[in-house]
Image (cartoon, rainbow, N blue to C red; front, side):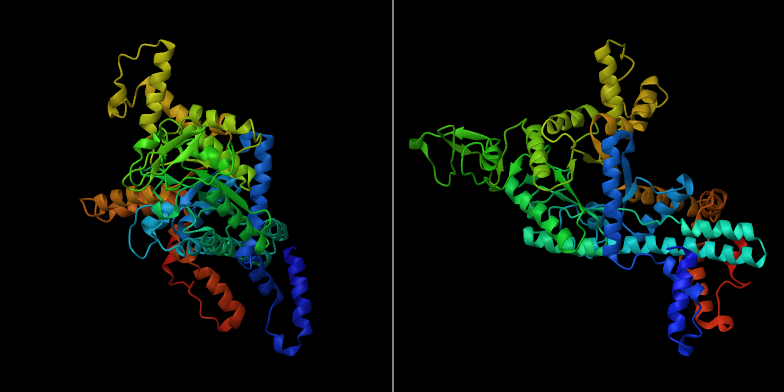
Length: 531
Protein backbone atom coordinates (compact mmCIF):
# COMPACT_ATOMS: atom_id res chain seq x y z
CA UNK A 1 0.00 0.00 0.00
CA UNK A 2 1.09 3.58 -0.64
CA UNK A 3 1.45 6.31 1.96
CA UNK A 4 -1.75 8.00 0.76
CA UNK A 5 -3.76 4.77 0.68
CA UNK A 6 -2.61 3.99 4.24
CA UNK A 7 -3.85 7.43 5.32
CA UNK A 8 -7.19 6.90 3.56
CA UNK A 9 -7.71 3.51 5.23
CA UNK A 10 -6.85 4.87 8.66
CA UNK A 11 -9.13 7.88 8.22
CA UNK A 12 -12.03 5.44 7.80
CA UNK A 13 -10.99 3.49 10.89
CA UNK A 14 -10.65 6.64 13.00
CA UNK A 15 -13.96 8.06 11.77
CA UNK A 16 -15.76 4.80 12.56
CA UNK A 17 -14.70 5.13 16.21
CA UNK A 18 -16.22 8.58 16.58
CA UNK A 19 -15.34 11.38 18.97
CA UNK A 20 -13.12 9.35 21.37
CA UNK A 21 -10.62 8.94 18.53
CA UNK A 22 -10.77 12.55 17.37
CA UNK A 23 -7.25 13.21 18.68
CA UNK A 24 -5.73 10.51 16.45
CA UNK A 25 -4.17 11.80 13.22
CA UNK A 26 -4.42 9.39 10.28
CA UNK A 27 -1.22 10.63 8.63
CA UNK A 28 0.78 10.14 11.82
CA UNK A 29 -0.61 6.62 12.30
CA UNK A 30 0.16 5.85 8.64
CA UNK A 31 3.75 6.94 9.19
CA UNK A 32 4.09 4.65 12.18
CA UNK A 33 2.67 1.75 10.17
CA UNK A 34 5.10 2.30 7.32
CA UNK A 35 7.98 2.59 9.75
CA UNK A 36 7.12 -0.85 11.15
CA UNK A 37 6.15 -2.99 8.17
CA UNK A 38 7.12 -6.30 9.83
CA UNK A 39 4.89 -7.26 12.74
CA UNK A 40 6.87 -10.27 13.94
CA UNK A 41 9.72 -12.61 13.15
CA UNK A 42 7.63 -14.92 10.99
CA UNK A 43 6.75 -11.98 8.73
CA UNK A 44 10.48 -11.42 8.34
CA UNK A 45 11.28 -15.10 7.76
CA UNK A 46 8.66 -15.40 5.00
CA UNK A 47 9.78 -12.17 3.35
CA UNK A 48 13.50 -13.00 3.42
CA UNK A 49 13.02 -16.66 2.38
CA UNK A 50 11.41 -15.38 -0.81
CA UNK A 51 14.44 -13.16 -1.42
CA UNK A 52 16.85 -16.06 -0.97
CA UNK A 53 14.87 -18.32 -3.29
CA UNK A 54 14.83 -15.63 -5.98
CA UNK A 55 18.56 -15.08 -5.54
CA UNK A 56 19.25 -18.81 -5.82
CA UNK A 57 17.32 -18.93 -9.10
CA UNK A 58 19.20 -15.87 -10.36
CA UNK A 59 22.51 -17.57 -9.54
CA UNK A 60 21.46 -20.74 -11.39
CA UNK A 61 20.81 -18.54 -14.45
CA UNK A 62 24.13 -16.69 -14.12
CA UNK A 63 26.88 -17.38 -11.52
CA UNK A 64 27.80 -13.69 -11.63
CA UNK A 65 24.72 -13.25 -9.40
CA UNK A 66 26.40 -14.64 -6.31
CA UNK A 67 25.50 -13.28 -2.87
CA UNK A 68 27.58 -12.05 0.07
CA UNK A 69 27.35 -11.44 3.79
CA UNK A 70 29.38 -10.44 6.81
CA UNK A 71 29.16 -11.97 10.28
CA UNK A 72 27.51 -10.09 13.17
CA UNK A 73 27.61 -10.42 16.94
CA UNK A 74 25.41 -7.43 17.85
CA UNK A 75 22.31 -5.82 16.40
CA UNK A 76 24.06 -2.48 16.02
CA UNK A 77 26.82 -4.05 13.92
CA UNK A 78 24.28 -5.63 11.57
CA UNK A 79 22.34 -2.39 11.35
CA UNK A 80 25.40 -0.34 10.46
CA UNK A 81 26.41 -2.82 7.76
CA UNK A 82 23.06 -2.50 6.01
CA UNK A 83 22.98 1.29 6.40
CA UNK A 84 26.46 1.40 4.85
CA UNK A 85 25.46 -0.91 2.01
CA UNK A 86 22.43 1.23 1.15
CA UNK A 87 24.57 4.37 1.38
CA UNK A 88 27.34 3.10 -0.91
CA UNK A 89 25.43 0.85 -3.32
CA UNK A 90 21.89 2.23 -3.28
CA UNK A 91 20.23 -1.09 -2.42
CA UNK A 92 20.75 -4.30 -0.45
CA UNK A 93 20.41 -6.67 -3.40
CA UNK A 94 22.22 -9.99 -2.90
CA UNK A 95 23.73 -8.79 0.38
CA UNK A 96 22.81 -10.62 3.58
CA UNK A 97 23.94 -10.96 7.19
CA UNK A 98 25.57 -14.00 8.75
CA UNK A 99 25.11 -15.09 12.35
CA UNK A 100 28.19 -16.98 13.47
CA UNK A 101 28.00 -19.54 16.25
CA UNK A 102 31.69 -18.84 16.86
CA UNK A 103 30.97 -15.19 17.63
CA UNK A 104 27.97 -16.06 19.79
CA UNK A 105 30.20 -18.36 21.84
CA UNK A 106 33.07 -15.90 22.05
CA UNK A 107 31.05 -12.73 22.66
CA UNK A 108 27.47 -13.47 23.74
CA UNK A 109 27.65 -16.19 26.37
CA UNK A 110 26.88 -15.65 30.05
CA UNK A 111 29.90 -17.86 30.78
CA UNK A 112 32.16 -15.27 29.17
CA UNK A 113 34.38 -15.96 26.15
CA UNK A 114 34.06 -19.58 25.03
CA UNK A 115 35.59 -21.65 22.23
CA UNK A 116 33.38 -22.70 19.34
CA UNK A 117 32.25 -25.96 20.94
CA UNK A 118 28.48 -25.45 21.44
CA UNK A 119 28.91 -24.71 25.13
CA UNK A 120 27.07 -21.37 24.97
CA UNK A 121 23.40 -21.04 25.81
CA UNK A 122 21.38 -22.25 22.85
CA UNK A 123 18.79 -19.51 23.42
CA UNK A 124 21.46 -16.87 22.75
CA UNK A 125 21.24 -17.70 19.04
CA UNK A 126 17.52 -16.87 18.51
CA UNK A 127 18.01 -13.92 20.88
CA UNK A 128 20.68 -12.50 18.58
CA UNK A 129 18.50 -13.07 15.50
CA UNK A 130 15.70 -11.10 17.15
CA UNK A 131 18.16 -8.39 18.19
CA UNK A 132 19.56 -8.07 14.68
CA UNK A 133 16.11 -7.62 13.19
CA UNK A 134 15.12 -5.16 15.92
CA UNK A 135 18.04 -2.96 14.89
CA UNK A 136 17.31 -3.39 11.17
CA UNK A 137 13.68 -2.41 11.71
CA UNK A 138 14.84 0.61 13.70
CA UNK A 139 17.05 1.58 10.74
CA UNK A 140 13.91 1.54 8.58
CA UNK A 141 12.05 3.72 11.07
CA UNK A 142 14.94 6.17 11.29
CA UNK A 143 15.39 6.57 7.54
CA UNK A 144 11.65 6.87 6.87
CA UNK A 145 11.35 9.31 9.77
CA UNK A 146 13.89 11.55 8.08
CA UNK A 147 11.95 11.31 4.83
CA UNK A 148 8.70 12.25 6.57
CA UNK A 149 10.38 15.27 8.16
CA UNK A 150 11.72 16.31 4.77
CA UNK A 151 8.23 15.88 3.28
CA UNK A 152 6.79 18.19 5.93
CA UNK A 153 9.51 20.76 5.22
CA UNK A 154 8.82 20.62 1.47
CA UNK A 155 5.11 21.12 2.01
CA UNK A 156 5.73 24.01 4.42
CA UNK A 157 7.95 25.61 1.77
CA UNK A 158 5.29 25.11 -0.91
CA UNK A 159 7.63 22.91 -2.97
CA UNK A 160 5.13 20.54 -4.55
CA UNK A 161 7.71 18.92 -6.85
CA UNK A 162 9.98 17.98 -3.95
CA UNK A 163 6.99 16.82 -1.91
CA UNK A 164 5.88 14.53 -4.73
CA UNK A 165 9.41 13.18 -5.14
CA UNK A 166 9.57 12.37 -1.44
CA UNK A 167 6.16 10.66 -1.50
CA UNK A 168 7.37 8.46 -4.36
CA UNK A 169 10.58 7.69 -2.43
CA UNK A 170 8.52 6.71 0.62
CA UNK A 171 6.29 4.44 -1.47
CA UNK A 172 9.32 2.73 -3.05
CA UNK A 173 11.35 2.57 0.17
CA UNK A 174 13.70 -0.43 0.39
CA UNK A 175 13.90 -2.01 3.82
CA UNK A 176 17.15 -2.74 5.63
CA UNK A 177 15.72 -6.17 6.52
CA UNK A 178 17.66 -8.83 4.61
CA UNK A 179 18.12 -12.60 4.97
CA UNK A 180 20.22 -13.86 7.86
CA UNK A 181 22.02 -17.17 7.48
CA UNK A 182 21.90 -18.43 11.06
CA UNK A 183 24.28 -20.99 12.53
CA UNK A 184 22.62 -23.72 14.61
CA UNK A 185 25.97 -25.53 15.06
CA UNK A 186 25.33 -29.30 15.20
CA UNK A 187 21.81 -28.82 16.57
CA UNK A 188 22.59 -28.62 20.31
CA UNK A 189 21.43 -32.14 21.02
CA UNK A 190 19.33 -34.80 19.30
CA UNK A 191 16.91 -34.22 16.42
CA UNK A 192 14.14 -33.12 18.78
CA UNK A 193 16.44 -30.53 20.36
CA UNK A 194 17.38 -29.35 16.88
CA UNK A 195 13.71 -28.98 15.92
CA UNK A 196 12.88 -26.99 19.07
CA UNK A 197 15.82 -24.62 18.61
CA UNK A 198 15.10 -24.24 14.90
CA UNK A 199 11.54 -23.14 15.77
CA UNK A 200 12.88 -20.46 18.10
CA UNK A 201 15.26 -19.24 15.42
CA UNK A 202 12.55 -19.11 12.76
CA UNK A 203 10.13 -17.35 15.09
CA UNK A 204 12.87 -14.75 15.65
CA UNK A 205 13.10 -14.19 11.88
CA UNK A 206 15.56 -16.73 10.47
CA UNK A 207 14.73 -17.83 6.93
CA UNK A 208 17.95 -19.81 6.55
CA UNK A 209 19.49 -22.24 9.04
CA UNK A 210 22.94 -23.76 8.67
CA UNK A 211 23.60 -27.09 10.38
CA UNK A 212 26.77 -29.19 10.47
CA UNK A 213 27.43 -32.93 10.55
CA UNK A 214 29.56 -33.02 13.67
CA UNK A 215 28.59 -34.83 16.87
CA UNK A 216 26.71 -32.26 18.91
CA UNK A 217 28.42 -32.92 22.25
CA UNK A 218 31.88 -33.22 20.65
CA UNK A 219 31.52 -30.18 18.38
CA UNK A 220 34.68 -28.30 17.45
CA UNK A 221 35.30 -25.16 15.40
CA UNK A 222 35.55 -26.16 11.74
CA UNK A 223 39.12 -24.86 11.62
CA UNK A 224 40.40 -26.77 14.62
CA UNK A 225 41.47 -30.36 15.14
CA UNK A 226 39.50 -33.13 16.82
CA UNK A 227 36.31 -32.97 14.73
CA UNK A 228 33.98 -35.96 14.97
CA UNK A 229 31.24 -36.58 12.39
CA UNK A 230 27.99 -38.52 12.65
CA UNK A 231 26.61 -41.20 10.33
CA UNK A 232 24.49 -39.80 7.53
CA UNK A 233 21.14 -40.97 8.88
CA UNK A 234 21.73 -39.05 12.12
CA UNK A 235 22.48 -35.87 10.17
CA UNK A 236 19.57 -36.33 7.78
CA UNK A 237 17.19 -36.67 10.74
CA UNK A 238 18.28 -33.20 11.89
CA UNK A 239 17.84 -31.76 8.40
CA UNK A 240 14.31 -33.16 8.39
CA UNK A 241 13.74 -31.71 11.88
CA UNK A 242 14.62 -28.23 10.61
CA UNK A 243 12.32 -28.66 7.61
CA UNK A 244 9.46 -29.70 9.87
CA UNK A 245 10.05 -26.57 11.95
CA UNK A 246 9.85 -24.38 8.84
CA UNK A 247 6.66 -26.09 7.67
CA UNK A 248 5.00 -25.97 11.09
CA UNK A 249 5.52 -22.21 11.23
CA UNK A 250 4.35 -21.56 7.68
CA UNK A 251 7.74 -20.68 6.21
CA UNK A 252 7.39 -23.23 3.45
CA UNK A 253 10.34 -21.99 1.41
CA UNK A 254 12.78 -21.73 4.31
CA UNK A 255 16.37 -22.54 3.35
CA UNK A 256 18.58 -25.22 4.91
CA UNK A 257 22.37 -25.15 4.53
CA UNK A 258 23.97 -28.55 5.14
CA UNK A 259 27.56 -28.18 6.26
CA UNK A 260 30.08 -31.00 6.08
CA UNK A 261 33.21 -30.94 8.21
CA UNK A 262 34.39 -34.26 6.83
CA UNK A 263 37.38 -32.82 4.97
CA UNK A 264 39.14 -32.09 8.25
CA UNK A 265 37.36 -34.63 10.45
CA UNK A 266 39.13 -37.95 10.81
CA UNK A 267 36.97 -39.38 13.58
CA UNK A 268 33.51 -40.82 14.17
CA UNK A 269 31.74 -41.77 17.36
CA UNK A 270 29.50 -44.41 15.81
CA UNK A 271 29.56 -47.24 13.37
CA UNK A 272 26.65 -46.63 11.02
CA UNK A 273 23.70 -49.00 10.91
CA UNK A 274 23.64 -51.00 7.68
CA UNK A 275 21.04 -53.43 6.37
CA UNK A 276 22.69 -54.48 3.13
CA UNK A 277 25.89 -53.95 1.15
CA UNK A 278 26.05 -50.57 -0.58
CA UNK A 279 23.42 -48.80 1.52
CA UNK A 280 24.22 -45.44 3.13
CA UNK A 281 25.40 -46.97 6.39
CA UNK A 282 27.65 -49.37 4.55
CA UNK A 283 29.12 -46.50 2.49
CA UNK A 284 29.90 -44.58 5.71
CA UNK A 285 31.51 -47.63 7.32
CA UNK A 286 33.58 -48.27 4.20
CA UNK A 287 35.70 -45.24 5.10
CA UNK A 288 36.62 -46.64 8.52
CA UNK A 289 40.25 -47.56 9.07
CA UNK A 290 40.09 -51.29 9.78
CA UNK A 291 42.35 -54.30 10.19
CA UNK A 292 41.39 -57.79 9.12
CA UNK A 293 41.02 -60.00 12.15
CA UNK A 294 41.98 -63.59 12.70
CA UNK A 295 39.15 -64.98 14.87
CA UNK A 296 41.77 -66.80 16.90
CA UNK A 297 43.40 -63.50 17.93
CA UNK A 298 40.31 -61.60 19.11
CA UNK A 299 41.05 -59.47 22.16
CA UNK A 300 38.87 -58.01 24.87
CA UNK A 301 36.75 -54.98 23.93
CA UNK A 302 37.19 -55.22 20.18
CA UNK A 303 34.37 -54.16 17.82
CA UNK A 304 33.92 -55.88 14.46
CA UNK A 305 32.21 -55.27 11.16
CA UNK A 306 31.86 -57.43 8.10
CA UNK A 307 33.43 -56.07 4.91
CA UNK A 308 33.54 -58.02 1.66
CA UNK A 309 32.99 -61.25 3.54
CA UNK A 310 35.86 -60.56 5.91
CA UNK A 311 35.84 -59.90 9.64
CA UNK A 312 37.28 -56.42 10.20
CA UNK A 313 38.12 -54.50 13.37
CA UNK A 314 37.76 -50.70 13.10
CA UNK A 315 40.62 -48.89 14.78
CA UNK A 316 39.32 -47.71 18.11
CA UNK A 317 41.08 -44.95 20.02
CA UNK A 318 41.37 -44.57 23.82
CA UNK A 319 38.77 -41.79 23.47
CA UNK A 320 36.33 -44.52 22.34
CA UNK A 321 36.23 -42.92 18.89
CA UNK A 322 36.87 -44.65 15.59
CA UNK A 323 39.11 -43.21 12.90
CA UNK A 324 38.66 -42.95 9.15
CA UNK A 325 41.25 -43.99 6.62
CA UNK A 326 43.67 -41.21 5.79
CA UNK A 327 43.00 -39.42 2.50
CA UNK A 328 39.25 -40.13 2.42
CA UNK A 329 38.13 -36.61 3.39
CA UNK A 330 37.15 -35.41 -0.08
CA UNK A 331 35.24 -38.61 -0.87
CA UNK A 332 33.36 -38.32 2.41
CA UNK A 333 32.57 -34.65 1.69
CA UNK A 334 31.14 -35.49 -1.71
CA UNK A 335 28.95 -38.27 -0.25
CA UNK A 336 27.82 -35.97 2.57
CA UNK A 337 26.82 -33.27 0.11
CA UNK A 338 24.96 -35.52 -2.29
CA UNK A 339 22.98 -37.26 0.45
CA UNK A 340 22.11 -33.95 2.13
CA UNK A 341 20.72 -32.46 -1.09
CA UNK A 342 18.84 -35.67 -1.82
CA UNK A 343 17.21 -35.48 1.61
CA UNK A 344 15.97 -31.92 1.95
CA UNK A 345 18.92 -29.53 2.17
CA UNK A 346 18.97 -26.58 -0.25
CA UNK A 347 22.57 -25.40 -0.08
CA UNK A 348 25.90 -26.92 0.88
CA UNK A 349 28.79 -25.73 3.01
CA UNK A 350 32.13 -27.50 2.71
CA UNK A 351 34.51 -26.41 5.46
CA UNK A 352 38.01 -26.35 4.01
CA UNK A 353 41.47 -25.76 5.43
CA UNK A 354 42.43 -23.17 2.82
CA UNK A 355 40.76 -20.95 0.19
CA UNK A 356 41.62 -22.85 -2.99
CA UNK A 357 39.29 -22.70 -5.98
CA UNK A 358 40.73 -25.86 -7.53
CA UNK A 359 40.10 -27.90 -4.40
CA UNK A 360 36.54 -26.63 -3.93
CA UNK A 361 35.70 -26.83 -7.61
CA UNK A 362 36.94 -30.41 -7.85
CA UNK A 363 34.52 -31.55 -5.16
CA UNK A 364 31.63 -29.50 -6.58
CA UNK A 365 32.16 -31.02 -10.03
CA UNK A 366 31.76 -34.48 -8.55
CA UNK A 367 28.63 -33.44 -6.64
CA UNK A 368 27.12 -31.86 -9.76
CA UNK A 369 27.48 -35.13 -11.65
CA UNK A 370 24.60 -36.27 -9.43
CA UNK A 371 22.93 -32.94 -8.46
CA UNK A 372 23.47 -30.56 -11.41
CA UNK A 373 22.32 -27.40 -9.62
CA UNK A 374 24.25 -27.98 -6.38
CA UNK A 375 25.27 -24.67 -4.81
CA UNK A 376 27.58 -23.78 -1.95
CA UNK A 377 27.77 -21.32 0.89
CA UNK A 378 31.49 -20.71 1.50
CA UNK A 379 33.29 -19.45 4.56
CA UNK A 380 35.90 -16.86 3.51
CA UNK A 381 37.33 -17.40 6.94
CA UNK A 382 39.68 -15.16 8.94
CA UNK A 383 41.13 -18.47 10.14
CA UNK A 384 42.92 -18.62 6.78
CA UNK A 385 46.08 -16.61 6.30
CA UNK A 386 44.88 -15.21 2.98
CA UNK A 387 48.10 -13.38 2.19
CA UNK A 388 50.35 -16.39 2.76
CA UNK A 389 47.97 -18.87 1.08
CA UNK A 390 47.64 -16.89 -2.12
CA UNK A 391 51.30 -15.95 -2.32
CA UNK A 392 52.13 -19.64 -2.04
CA UNK A 393 49.52 -20.47 -4.71
CA UNK A 394 51.14 -17.95 -7.08
CA UNK A 395 54.60 -19.26 -6.20
CA UNK A 396 53.52 -22.83 -7.00
CA UNK A 397 51.83 -21.75 -10.25
CA UNK A 398 54.88 -19.83 -11.39
CA UNK A 399 57.18 -22.70 -10.49
CA UNK A 400 55.00 -25.12 -12.47
CA UNK A 401 55.14 -22.74 -15.44
CA UNK A 402 58.94 -22.72 -15.30
CA UNK A 403 59.26 -19.13 -14.07
CA UNK A 404 62.26 -18.14 -11.99
CA UNK A 405 61.16 -18.02 -8.33
CA UNK A 406 64.66 -18.03 -6.85
CA UNK A 407 64.10 -14.56 -5.39
CA UNK A 408 61.38 -15.91 -3.10
CA UNK A 409 61.42 -18.14 -0.02
CA UNK A 410 58.09 -20.02 -0.13
CA UNK A 411 58.03 -20.56 3.62
CA UNK A 412 58.52 -16.84 4.35
CA UNK A 413 56.22 -15.27 1.76
CA UNK A 414 54.22 -13.53 4.50
CA UNK A 415 57.22 -11.26 5.11
CA UNK A 416 56.77 -7.53 4.53
CA UNK A 417 59.88 -7.76 2.37
CA UNK A 418 57.71 -9.25 -0.39
CA UNK A 419 54.85 -6.71 -0.19
CA UNK A 420 56.03 -4.67 -3.19
CA UNK A 421 56.88 -7.64 -5.43
CA UNK A 422 55.14 -8.84 -8.59
CA UNK A 423 54.27 -12.07 -6.81
CA UNK A 424 52.49 -10.19 -4.03
CA UNK A 425 50.62 -8.07 -6.58
CA UNK A 426 49.34 -11.14 -8.43
CA UNK A 427 48.37 -12.80 -5.15
CA UNK A 428 46.39 -9.72 -4.13
CA UNK A 429 44.61 -9.71 -7.47
CA UNK A 430 43.63 -13.35 -6.96
CA UNK A 431 42.30 -12.47 -3.51
CA UNK A 432 40.35 -9.55 -4.98
CA UNK A 433 38.64 -11.74 -7.58
CA UNK A 434 38.38 -14.87 -5.44
CA UNK A 435 34.65 -14.57 -4.79
CA UNK A 436 33.78 -13.85 -8.40
CA UNK A 437 36.07 -16.61 -9.68
CA UNK A 438 34.83 -19.15 -7.13
CA UNK A 439 31.20 -18.33 -7.91
CA UNK A 440 31.87 -19.07 -11.56
CA UNK A 441 34.26 -22.02 -11.23
CA UNK A 442 33.35 -23.68 -7.93
CA UNK A 443 29.57 -23.35 -7.61
CA UNK A 444 29.64 -20.91 -4.73
CA UNK A 445 26.31 -19.08 -4.45
CA UNK A 446 27.03 -17.27 -1.20
CA UNK A 447 30.30 -15.90 0.14
CA UNK A 448 30.54 -14.89 3.77
CA UNK A 449 33.16 -13.81 6.27
CA UNK A 450 32.32 -15.32 9.64
CA UNK A 451 34.20 -13.06 12.03
CA UNK A 452 34.96 -9.72 10.33
CA UNK A 453 33.69 -7.39 13.03
CA UNK A 454 35.44 -9.37 15.76
CA UNK A 455 38.70 -8.45 14.05
CA UNK A 456 37.78 -4.91 12.99
CA UNK A 457 36.67 -4.09 16.54
CA UNK A 458 39.97 -5.38 17.92
CA UNK A 459 42.06 -3.50 15.35
CA UNK A 460 40.23 -0.18 15.67
CA UNK A 461 40.23 -0.40 19.47
CA UNK A 462 43.96 -1.09 19.50
CA UNK A 463 44.62 1.95 17.31
CA UNK A 464 42.35 4.17 19.39
CA UNK A 465 43.92 3.06 22.69
CA UNK A 466 47.43 3.57 21.35
CA UNK A 467 46.68 7.13 20.22
CA UNK A 468 44.31 8.32 22.96
CA UNK A 469 46.39 7.07 25.90
CA UNK A 470 49.57 8.21 24.17
CA UNK A 471 50.83 11.61 23.09
CA UNK A 472 47.88 12.34 20.81
CA UNK A 473 45.42 12.55 23.68
CA UNK A 474 41.98 13.70 22.58
CA UNK A 475 43.24 14.18 19.03
CA UNK A 476 43.70 10.40 18.98
CA UNK A 477 39.89 10.18 18.96
CA UNK A 478 38.92 13.31 17.04
CA UNK A 479 41.20 12.93 14.00
CA UNK A 480 40.78 9.24 13.10
CA UNK A 481 37.22 8.81 14.37
CA UNK A 482 34.92 11.82 14.68
CA UNK A 483 36.48 13.88 11.91
CA UNK A 484 36.33 10.91 9.56
CA UNK A 485 32.70 10.25 10.52
CA UNK A 486 31.91 13.82 9.49
CA UNK A 487 34.00 13.73 6.30
CA UNK A 488 32.61 10.36 5.19
CA UNK A 489 29.00 11.03 6.15
CA UNK A 490 28.79 8.27 8.76
CA UNK A 491 25.33 8.51 10.28
CA UNK A 492 26.54 7.55 13.75
CA UNK A 493 28.30 10.88 14.19
CA UNK A 494 24.79 11.93 15.25
CA UNK A 495 24.57 9.16 17.80
CA UNK A 496 21.44 10.57 19.48
CA UNK A 497 19.58 10.34 16.19
CA UNK A 498 20.91 6.83 15.58
CA UNK A 499 19.66 5.72 18.99
CA UNK A 500 16.14 6.90 18.15
CA UNK A 501 15.91 10.36 19.72
CA UNK A 502 14.28 11.97 16.68
CA UNK A 503 11.85 9.07 16.29
CA UNK A 504 10.88 9.55 19.92
CA UNK A 505 10.35 13.30 19.35
CA UNK A 506 8.04 12.55 16.43
CA UNK A 507 6.01 10.18 18.58
CA UNK A 508 5.79 12.69 21.41
CA UNK A 509 4.36 15.20 18.97
CA UNK A 510 1.84 12.65 17.66
CA UNK A 511 0.77 11.81 21.20
CA UNK A 512 0.80 15.24 22.88
CA UNK A 513 0.81 17.81 20.09
CA UNK A 514 2.14 21.22 21.12
CA UNK A 515 2.56 20.01 24.70
CA UNK A 516 5.27 17.55 23.68
CA UNK A 517 8.59 17.97 25.48
CA UNK A 518 11.10 17.22 22.72
CA UNK A 519 14.83 16.59 22.92
CA UNK A 520 15.85 18.21 19.65
CA UNK A 521 15.71 21.83 20.76
CA UNK A 522 18.38 24.48 20.41
CA UNK A 523 20.42 23.12 23.33
CA UNK A 524 20.82 19.68 21.78
CA UNK A 525 24.53 19.40 21.00
CA UNK A 526 23.74 17.16 18.03
CA UNK A 527 22.88 20.41 16.22
CA UNK A 528 26.66 21.03 16.02
CA UNK A 529 26.82 18.39 13.29
CA UNK A 530 24.17 19.96 11.07
CA UNK A 531 26.89 21.57 8.94
